[in-house]
Image 1: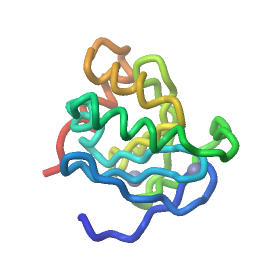
Image 2: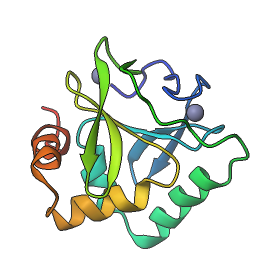
Image 3: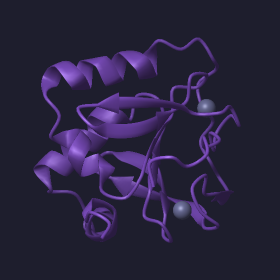
Length: 138
Ligand SMILES: [Zn+2]
Ligand SMILES: [Zn+2]
């Protein structure tokens, strides 16, 4: 699954860049600062050292595109044939694919999402997401 085609941003349709953090390969948008995480990657991201998190945050915020618009309708998943739906992950709304269990974080949502994963004290909906998105694909 490491040599798949580049994904397209669900918010601004730019082609996502690949970046690797201690072996964790993520897809991020150079234009709007969005971040796509495949199933289980949010958990791995939460375990990265602070220096790597800082580097990731830098890549996401050093963009000059317009801020992403909140999605009010179902958008196609960039990684599969599924549709993304908005769910709460900790304090932020994230776009979650119920089919491949990937999540899309808008610019600025990374910190809250990581905090939610680390604390595991989010609400019922987020726990539901955790069960799928946090489990590492077999
Ligand atoms: Zn984008
Ligand atoms: Zn999907």
